[in-house]
Length: 482
Image (cartoon, rainbow, N blue to C red; front, side, top):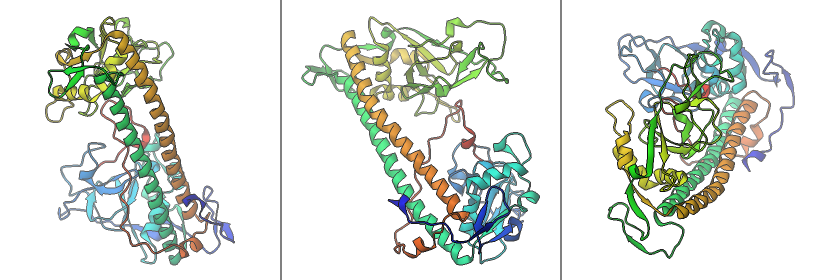
């Protein structure tokens, strides 16, 4: 319903003089950024301000402590840091092109890599000025004035940034635009949170299907017996309890050769990265080219059907498992991933994978994952061999695997459709901000008819889970210096 707000174009437009901006409403001013904003110019030389801030794409200006273990670390000496105050716009001169800019709610200080901009006139609404900085077309237009080769690491010089043109509606209209965007943003975030909640429930449903199938099988009337393991409870009477060591022919670990700098050639060897293994799915593109040295590694070359288990990762992801499908030829195992070779007479690789992904598998994995302070937990081969499994006859295992795959595919299809809806909602929000802030749509009438809202602002939707060390980052995931 929120997409069908009756917005119309402005009745009279004029050329803005900015090639990507095009026409703006006739009664709007077009001014240089430097005429509307100036650098705050305060530094923390006396160390009076101790709260360090950071800017993250999508989240804006946040306390440094909230950004987690991503991006550059803050300096021990914060006397050279710049001071920022509420309603200042903070721009990362290196990452603004990918959206590293935001409005501060806090007093604090941050790295000299940021520009701290404050309004020249109280007539201007800082939320409107920030909304313009958030528009993707404006961010991307800054590539023209950037110094550097990589777009997402270009330095934007302040002397050029302040010359960029900026649309300036009258004050009352700035307030209307801010109110409209806030109203719509809350509704879009509410939709997104509902979709994310659905995905979480679907994931829980998957876990329940896997758990039930690998601990009780498919026959609801099966006779059961105590497993002898407190946390496992009762299991089918005819299933056999054994260590994984009995089920496996071998456990192999790869190595981490030097990654090649140049582009990947068709006949070049590649090595898997940690992110190739993701909760039962194999990602064939999670590879790095290997330096061209004279060797052959057929012994640790990955083949379709291989069962992989991560040796080291974050606590939630260590011991993640998948079966290889669609692997690129000449791809080798890395030292952070094990290849498990099951004894096919005893255990089906698919059954073993689902067992490891189930709550009983995860319980054993997480209790054995070891890591000293500051290092990622690791699993030793002896741990894997010692884990306990309740193993049905091989024919029954095959049926269980087929059942789980069939049930999970239905859930995965719903999840994919829901993720697509979330992506479309985010895309719509991005486009809406740009259209409204740059004067392509007139919101004045819509805002005049809005009901008064007295409820608390909605919290932001959950952020995407961070990537673990060793996984690839897209440019959009780059975080800022503290």
